[in-house]
Amino acid sequence: MTARARGVPTPAVVAAAVYRAGLFDRYDLVTELVPSVQPLAAWLEGSTPLAGWERAVDGAARLVRQLSDAGIVHVDLNAHNVLLSPEEPENGWVVDLDRARVTSAPNREVARRMSTRLLRSVRKIAATAGTRIDADETGRTLHATADAGEVNE
Image (cartoon, rainbow, N blue to C red; front, side, top):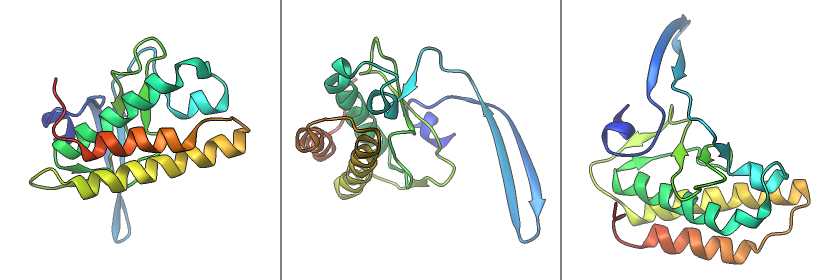
């Protein structure tokens, strides 16, 4: 909820449940449906045409920047947690923020680590799917956006 309040595009939570499980609690969340989006991984796995890959990477990089600018550290950022529309991939959503950490200020080093983790995920999925992408160019795009200043809306 903090990420959304800080301007990060993430689906709104519409219902939640907490279950006691010994020393720990288990949480289940139901979020709003975001229509017409697919994970970034879909481009690599062949369910979305690879022709839009560059725009998809730009959209993913923008999300990394938005997280960083909002002081949100997504500790599990991967190609399955970045949701993009095939028609407008520059306007994406990020999900699976259950282990995210909140900081008080943007941190470019944290943004770089998130983009590196996302790139590792992209490379792994592409290799498994047999999809040929320019991983070096993808990495440059992700890192350049992470290293830049604040996202302009």
